[in-house]
Image 1 (tube, rainbow, N blue to C red):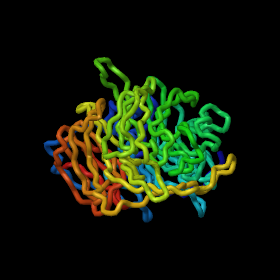
Image 2: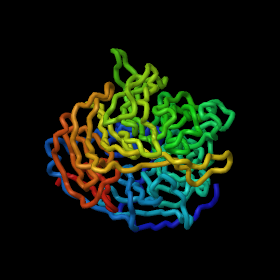
Image 3: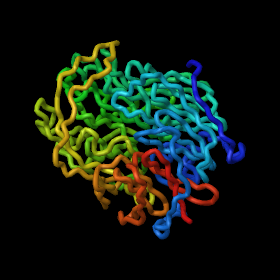
Image 4: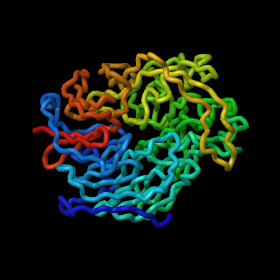
Length: 534
C-alpha cells in the first residue's frame, strides 16, 4: 500500500448522515430480504440480477416516467456502470475511475471522488471505463483503471486505504466491480492482450493488506504448464465480476483468453486455465475445480461473463447449479459443487463446434481456426455476449440474456513470443476482418435455466451491449444499441413499455426503492436516467 493522490468533492448533503447505514456481511448474504436496496453488483452473491420489487409490474409499467437524470461530470464514452443502492444512497462510477454518491430519490450529488491517474494509462483490450463498486461495513470499494484498489468512507468519500494491485506499465488495468464478502474484497484484472499473467486477489477489507493471490495460469514447471508446450503461460485475466456461494464458501470467476491471441501455433495444448471458470476457496485462494469452455482458444472468446448460481432439480434430484451464457455461443449448466458438466446448448448461431463429449469438451469443427486469408466463424470476436450481465428469475425459472448474432473473418498473424519475466505490451496474433453485408442483429432471449431451451425472444435491430434485469413484477428490462430502453413481460417476451434515450445503452439496469417508490435506472450516452411511476 501507499498513500493515494485523489480528488474529492463534497456537496451539501441532501439527506442526513444517519441515512448512511452499515452494510454487514450478513446483510449481503440475505440481500433478497431487502429488495428496496441493490447491495451488490449482481444484485446478490448469486449474480442473478433479480429484484423482489413489484410496485412496477406488467399492469402499470406503461406509465413509467422519468424521475431524474444525472450527467457525468466530464465527457465519457462506454458508460458501463451498474449502481449500488444502500438505504436511499446510490453509489455509481463514472469513467475512468470516479465514484459518486447521491440521493437515490432525487439524484442530488452528495460527494464525488476521483483518483489522479498517470498521464499515460495502459488499458490493452479494455475500454477506460468502470463497472461499479462494492460496499461492506461503512466503506465503498472501487478498483481503478491503473490497477489500484481503493477504500472510501461511505459518508464522505475520504480515502481510507489504497492498495497497489499490480503495475499498469506492464499492461494490468482494472475496469470490474470488486466483490465484497466476509472481511475480504475480491478483485481481478485485465490485460491478456498484453501478455500479462492473470490472477485473482483477496484484500483485507479494513486494512487493504493482500490476503492471497491465485495465479490463473501456471508458471513454467508448475502443474498445468505442460498444456502450453514450450510457451510461457500468459493471459487468463479475470477482468469482469464473479459470483459467490456463502454456504460453499466458493468464488466463481471467469478467465480470459490465452496470449498471444488468435494464433496458437507456439502454445500447443489446452492452455490451462484460460477461457475457463474457476471455483476458488474464499479463505485460502486455492482452486477447488475448473471447467474450460474453449481449450486452446484462438477466437478471443473470454469466459468472463458473470456466472449465475441457482438451485433446480436435474433428473428428479435437487442440484446446486451454475448457468453461464458464454461468449463462444453456448449456454452451459454446471454442478457448482463439483464443476461437473451437465449440458451445453447454442443460444446464438455458432459454426465452430459440433457437440461435446461426456465431460463437456467441445468437438471442434476442422478449419475453424484463424487463417492468413481469414476464416469466417460465428460468433464474432466481440462474442455472443461480452461483459454485460444476464439475469435469472426464480419465479419463471428463466435465464435472460441479451444475445449478439454476428460473425466475422478471423485473421491470423505472427506475433513475438511471450518471454518469462518480460511482459510485452502487445501480444495480438491477428484479429478480425468484418463480414461485409452481415445480417447481424441482437435479441433478448429467455432460456430454460436447466435445459437452455429458448422459450421466447425479442429481436433487436443490431447486437447490443446492455445487460438484463428481472423483477418480481414479472418484467425484464433491457436496451438497445440504438438508444431504446424497454420492458418486456418476463413470461412471454411481450413488449410493454419503451422510451428512446438518444444514445446507445451500455450498462446493466438496476431497480431499487426510495421514499416508498420503486425506481429503475440505466445509463445511455453520458447520462443516467431514473424512472418511476407517476
